[in-house]
Image (tube, rainbow over all chains, first blue to last red; front, side):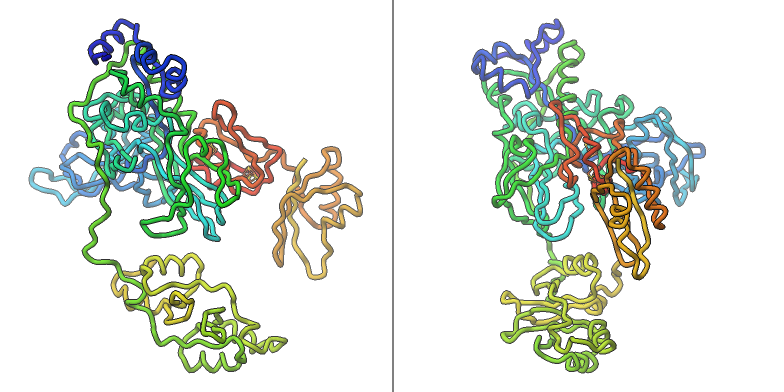
Length: 502
Length: 128
Ligand code: SF4
Ligand code: SF4
């Protein structure tokens, strides 16, 4: 049993093609069986609407008089790439404004252009014989641009791991606000409507295939960056004409504390060529599972707390370690449906024909991690091994003496067996000495909650701890929580030399 | 109705909310309060017909009380119905309807403002 793409396109032209969305497909297959569904359905439309950070647009401004070869370029104070010739640039979605920071970025520039607002171009150049002009500044509308071509290197993730945070402070990530103590779970992706989840073997979605991109017809360029379908995380690189896009399916956004991103609406129509397509498009939310990752772990390998499928995520809460935790989607299922519905309408009306890939995308690829020739500095490279600590049973006066002699402002406090139980600072000790009261022992004035680091930890992560907790030293502990060194802001000074910290 | 009360704490000052309850006999439900050493802010809920009495008594006692007509406001043209706010709200004021459209139960809102920054589309505002 087989239908050719030409037969399907013929039906589309005649207005007789039967088109359904990927959300409708599972029940059609359940009702009619795979063969019945194959005979009944010609096209299945998919859709997704969510934050797709790796997006942007190529812009060609046309030439000015006298002409300029733009080297540094800003659009509404958002820097655009100046490494392309003359009057070409690429504006990336997450690039932030130099004046408004995370409240405005490349995504907002693109959104403003599409919404018909004017955008200020500023550029400069060193001037050449052929391009004598050195500066330019002008107000531009989308219609004034010679070309504006959306080209998104990584869109339409097949699925995305959900996120939670087991630490005791809120995290601000590209997965949104993650409340402390696993206070919530966030996730992204349209589940059963997701384009690549309906074609995991990448038979139908490939280079040259026409798609719905932000409300107008676009095209798949090929595999997206980080494309990793071997583990179920395929991505697409897509392109479309910004000038033809309405503003409904393209939205700039800000993940507070993380930065700017662009919400993109994207859908792919899938021709039902054979029973394999029927099977693939019958996928349900229950069939697509992801990990719930703990974002409090700052490394590449974040631990998974459990597996969860999209039906569970969409139900509003999931259980982690016996507790009900509320879930939040970051992408919009309502708009994903709208994308699939609108695309369905286009195909039904004969306005949109399908095509097979001119070149297939590799369905077995796995993304590789970065090859790092030099590991970044670790705490052990700069920590101060001459750490002076104090026993919890010692007198405050003893602490004062140690602080004076040791030339340090921090004393880790240890118990009888040498493990870390607290910390006292010069401030704590002076306060106790200035107001003599009930407190006599170090134990009485120490801070019991100590933020620590380990010798193997990356310095950048230790620095984040110092910044986040607004402290100036971290005791370095071994696996038994024994103090082996201390890391202070001074040690960092040594390391960074020219490279200054904020 | 909800009232936002702001007051400064003088040394030896009496707990103002308790004092108002005693003087007016109105039952006050404290929904949220932030009080530090020098000043305080509390969101209280009182029966609609006694809002003015409570507000006047508060003012007489040196506090500032303002009647709040609205909880959080959703700007429909910015909201994309993602749902990022749903798990953030401690009062579960947000839910999805059958069509996955965002629904707000304004009465549940205690104006804590946590959702404001968590909305990626800046669709939520508190008019205080
Ligand atoms: S987070 Fe903002 S955009 Fe998303 S549903 Fe809530 S109000 Fe709407
Ligand atoms: S202000 Fe606070 S209580 Fe009100 S909706 Fe937002 S998070 Fe919920």
